[in-house]
Length: 418
Image (tube, rainbow, N blue to C red):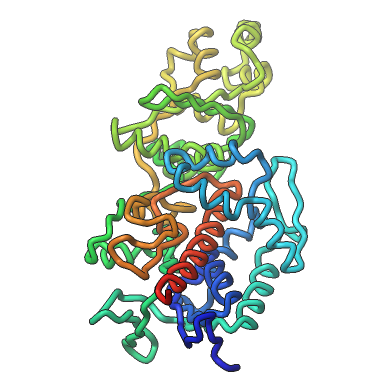
């Protein structure tokens, strides 16, 4: 295939480092405009984290109102908004449809491909990119710059690549086995690029269970509970759903949704206190009336199971947290059932997290995501300093950032030739 010639008549090649959703989207924008794209990735194939994220059902975006969706990006929403204005959820769904894959909105408002899978979408996308002339170079680990050239470690040894325009799409620091190692952080810091430390996001937390509780209940779900948490600023989070008890603590969607708040509070105060309502929908008076009923020769465990529906891991939690005398005081017992305090003492390691926070600061970038101090170098995706909960928000912003950077590179190349 002849090398594409850009609109200024030059055989120009843009290098993209990283083959996740953000890097691939930037490659699409550029290749469709006739720019030659060479994409390098450290792994044997691209999109590995994308495929892993789709194993439980490819939640590609969310259908809620724009303002509600934007709120999930917290303090970074002012930077995320222009990206989503340019390529938001509806544009993303149209793009998926143009690949020949229909989407649907689930009962929770999440958007999925009709077959719920990521692999068919990725296959069609890669075919489109190859037809557009994108070249892929696998097992090329980026090592930074050497004499102004990009340096890669390859199976054949170190290789230098000359590139005036580079898009870095290297991911965050979670799931390193899939390629997001965070090894790029010192490489950019050495160049004077401001980078906030990478931290776990959408992660579980340590509690420090007793050996007895851990051996009995690790791996069991806590179904139909309500979690309440108030951060240092007085913001209160309260939502009902399901948790998973782990050997070390707790995880699951309810915890992931507030992981940023919990993580920051642990850093500031040494711990974060959440409260579990083990019987949502039942008020204290109802519980008190049931507990005060005569139990005869029944054990308290049987009494709680029959009268209140508290058994299994929920009963185990009460035994883990409360003192023996608390079970002899019906009022204290009811209060605990409705608001059982659980102290979270540490976030789980970043490599176990679904995503990461921290990264290249937005203040270091222009509106096209180009590094102000390094003209021609762009950063996209999860390596930027933002975070969001699961639910389609992570992918939506990654796709959008790739789109913005791709358009930004086109504008940069145009300006170079004026």
